[in-house]
Image (cartoon, rainbow, N blue to C red; front, top):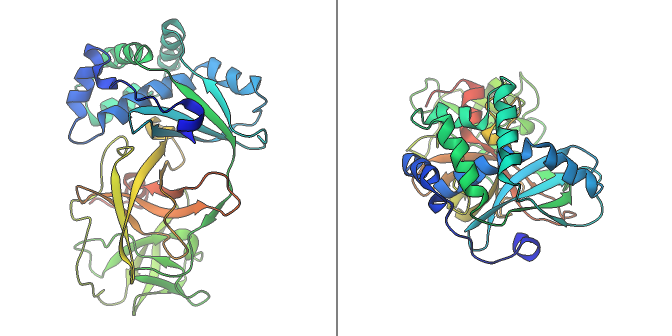
Length: 344
C-alpha cells in the first residue's frame, strides 16, 4: 500500500545525507537500524509542527490520530508515515510532507523551548555522545535527501490474539488456552513468566501455565502485560531470547524476526513498522511494533525475537478481518519490562 500511494522508487541512504547524519548512524550502528532511527527523528519533528495538523485538517481528518506508524517501503529504502484517524472514511489519502528547513527548524526550537523532553533527549538517553546540535543538523540534512509523505487512513479494527495454539499454554478457570507465555524470568524462585494481561483479567485469578498452577502477581494495563508466579517449576526443553531484551530506541524496520507456536514451531515474520511515539521520552502509553499479519488466536503474550536472539516485543492483537490493512500488533518489550519492574 505504501508503495502504491507514495511510490516504489528506491531512496538514497539517509546515513549519507550529510556529516551529522553519518556521525549519528556510526554511533548507533550495532544496536539500532541507523536508517530507521534517522527517519524517525525527521518524522518526530514533522509531527510536532503545526503544518502536520493543518495538513490532516485540510483533507477532513478531524479526529486526533490514533496511530502514527513509521513504515519502510520501496525495498526498505524509504521510511514514511502511516497515520490512522478515527472517523476518516474517505479511503487512503496521500499527503506530501517535505517541510522546508525553516519550518523544521521552527518545530525543533519550539519543542526545545517548551522545556519538555524531545526526540533529541530520547536519543541522548541511549547515546550520550549524540548532541542536540547533531540531531538538529541531521534533520536539516535528511529533509533534502528524499521525498517524504504520509498516508492517511481510518482507524483499523483489531482483535486480541486469544485462544489456541500457544507454545506454553495459559489457561484460566473461565477460558482454556487463552494466551501464550512470553518471557521466563531467569533466576526467579519460584518461577515467574510474562503473558498478556487481557487474557487473565482478575488480579487474584488462578491460572495454569502448561501443567503448573500460577497466580498473577504484577500487572500493567498500559503495556497489556503481567507477571505470573508459578507453583513449582516450569519444564521447558530449551529457551530463546537469551540475549535479553532489545534495549534500543527503535526496532529495525524491515528486519526479519520470529516467534514460536506449538506444533508449528518457529514462525518467521518481518518488522513492518513502529509507532513514532517510541521517540517520545515522556509518553504515558505503550508504543507498538507491527509485523506481517501472522499471529492468530492464542498467540497473545508470545515474544517476538530478532536475529540477534533479543526479545523485541510481545504479541497483543492483529487487524481484524474487516480491516483494509493487515498487520499483527506487538508491544515494545523494553517498555513492558520497565513497566513490570523486570531488570533483565
